[in-house]
Length: 249
Ligand code: ADE
Image (cartoon, rainbow, N blue to C red; front, side, top):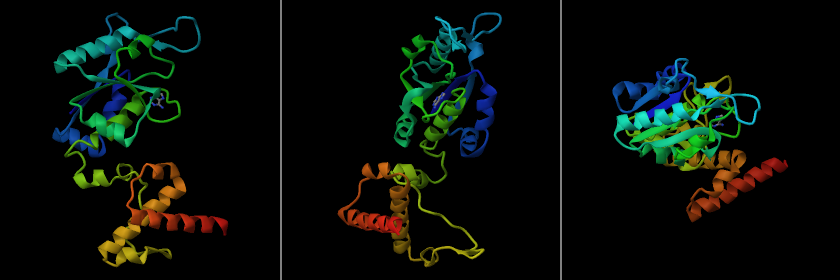
């Protein structure tokens, strides 16, 4: 898969992509991600990418021409239409499912918006707008990096062990269970006995319970969408009662 990120700050994207799991995957050629300087797609001597808004008001708006030219030039390189995403706080919220869907595309073109605005006519040319959360960033670069990271993790071979993506907390629809490493006793804080027991069935059961408990406590909205067996449903009721009891105490 290839992801092109169109931005006025290509160095910000390039720098961030060198590190970690995604950086290594790019080095190996498992996926390609390129930062593309929006100014390269201007035609004037001063390489201007923004202008004052019609009707007045503060801030600058990204001009349509460089963005349209960027999309067209990149699609020409690819030899086909790209799936074009615009980062925007007005967009569809990014979720694990959205990331998975985008990872199945051969080519993704991400346009980094600016918080002051993007000329409305660009919206007609994009396939979707994506938001990474209900807050305002100064630009789409951080959002584009988040999207690229989420998408990259679904590409086979990016995350070493394919299993771990399926087991990622949001892929299971639940929050993570607690993890511990050595020492077994740190300043009197002990690792739960079950994890030292070597009993894999019990460990699995404990982890499931902890995941459910964390999710019920912190993100009950996720539980409604989570599928459980009738046995697990009963178990969940018990966990819920325990939580209520602890809250009442
Ligand atoms: N640009 C500014 N804020 C954003 C957000 N929350 N998500 C995506 N793009 C943005």
